[in-house]
Length: 125
Image (cartoon, rainbow, N blue to C red):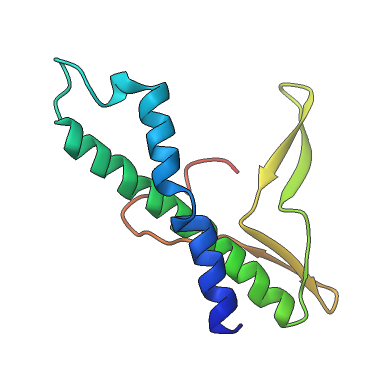
């Protein structure tokens, strides 16, 4: 993968609309940032929101980067949603993978981790 592609993906996912979305979020949910009973000051809450958003988008960008990398190395990306029927609920649900790809009759299931300070293994999907 060349630098131009790498840079474009990061800019699109992380920096492209982050400040505009933050402003929309403030306009739609001002109570999350202001209020006499908020334990954090508005400036701190804004910074916290922006940094958390960037961490999530960083992970999303890396999912896109890895998918692009797999394509460049002759893997065939497949749908990341695997359907199944939940017997208790008797309805179709989906497990979601970070990456699912096939190469030479072998299937690759990939769960990506960008942070080591939380455990999402307890969550389904």
